[in-house]
Image: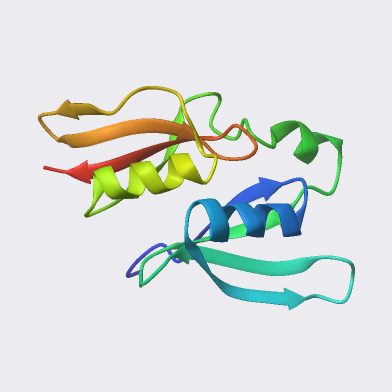
Length: 128
């Protein structure tokens, strides 16, 4: 095994999720394939990245709908690295991303916690 290719993120709606991740976060839409059964195979990842992507999977039942926005139990579950913390932080704020704290500068780097459109918590992080 060489790497993790995808991680699934359960969402309420494909189009609103694609709009948030490609618009507010600046990710690339890598694939959006109709599976013929009302579902789609939708993959996004940070622009220019060759690493893991997110499979945006629309919730199909009540149990899945209940997990949208709470897939990590309220903890930060996703870590978005940047080489331009101040620039990306400002661009994301201007795009309406909700940051839960002011930027902090720790020994490991600059960081600020934000929420995606469903309330999943992310770190925007520029490692030291």
